[in-house]
Length: 112
Image (cartoon, rainbow, N blue to C red; front, top):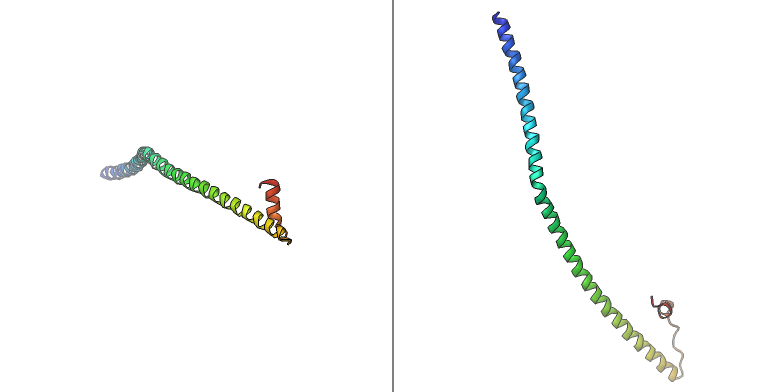
């Protein structure tokens, strides 16, 4: 009978150890899930802050690019007027100016 009692205690101990391991795993998984759920709003705030920083930088870059394009267009028009004045001088002096490059002709014709 004592042998049955000892075997019974060992079997009960194995079942208890197994249940404890499963309970620990379930508790660990629940803790991890709770931590993720709690961290989600914070992560979203961090993501939103990063997005806003990127958006602000892109807006700044776009504004700078627009100003540079305006400046380059102004220089282009100044050079264009200057080149036309030089062409007229060459013609007035009886010369023949060189042929206008095709991309310039296309630009004057289409504006692009």
